[in-house]
Image (cartoon, rainbow, N blue to C red; front, top):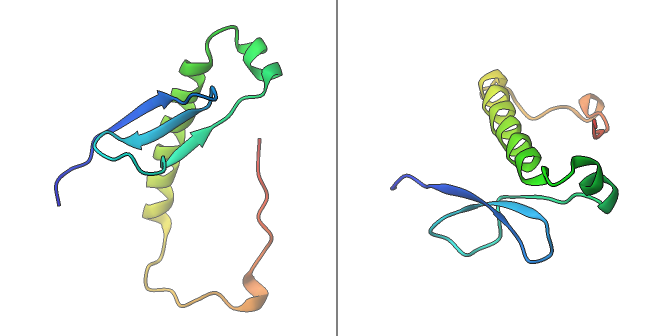
Length: 86
């Protein structure tokens, strides 16, 4: 399999997306800012989107190293609700 190259683009609706350069399918990641957030960022929203995507890629890499791939499926009592941390 050949290596993939990625790009961050601004979509027609103003959202930002991470996608493969050679693929027109659904983006891998989309970032959407509210009007209030855009106003607070004062035209730096692309830089913030880049930083968020970079941090996400780094975090995903760190999580992948922490996974015990030999572990069985979690028991029903081990499942905890997931929360979004902002």
